[in-house]
Length: 366
Image (tube, rainbow, N blue to C red; front, side, top):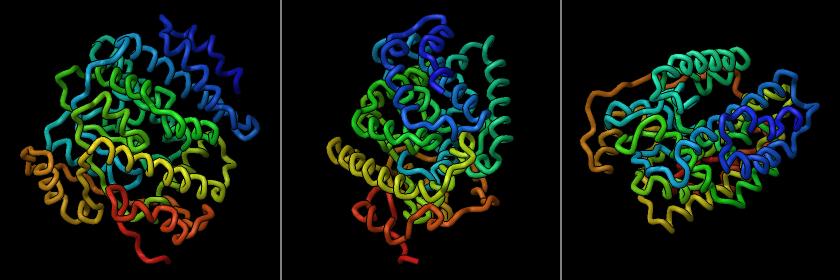
């Protein structure tokens, strides 16, 4: 696996090598691959992983070269919180209601091409082909999180390009990498995130962004988007964990078809609890006022929820909403127990956050 990802080869593909690529990338790649069993990856999975990392490095390197040092601050409303809570649905509604700029799939794929007409057509074509290939390899993953080059996209890919993002641990068995994430702040990651957004827009762009990966380090997010407002959608923790674990299983099976579900539950429950503790501390220390809405309310009364968010943000939200139908899962969803967890253990491990800004009070154990 390491032969596929020699740093010298990554650097050779770049017209110019940034200090980030030269000094930071080797450590990140080593950590990412430290726990990988090459025998576990399928031939297609090994090739796909190699291409994912190479693309991330090339994209982030271009952003760092475009904005050496600290990039201009980002003006954003950010839908954060936890994954699988309805944030994609909320983002699609708020994009129209708040009149803010949304990131498109092809822009997140190759942000350096967004303002260059001669590159834009190729970037869109490449993104469409890439997403079509991903759907072909894992149609179940697409059902849970649709990929659309021309549609609205979250800003997770921008964080993923930095090689400092929990998204990589969804795709790979990478406990050493996750421990490193716990031990560090994502300062470089968020400068790269901001640089990519400045490649797509400019310092006057008013963004509406969304990623559940922001909760891992709100302090670094605020450092590059000091005036950003954060919105959470709260969901029952049992439903959230069950949905997330199914998504993680599908993502990992793209690379390793032999992933065992039972090995995922306790690992991810522990990681969520640890990152939530840090996130809550960041919110308290920085005095962040999080706008909190509940998923049941969002599904029953989206107009009312949008009106409430507008009031909290101090803006008049448009009454004309785009209301996409929430995804109805047609794939076979494994129950929580298949991942080695019980509802009671989830409630107990996350009890300090139930009813807080991230999670609804849990339903009785079942």
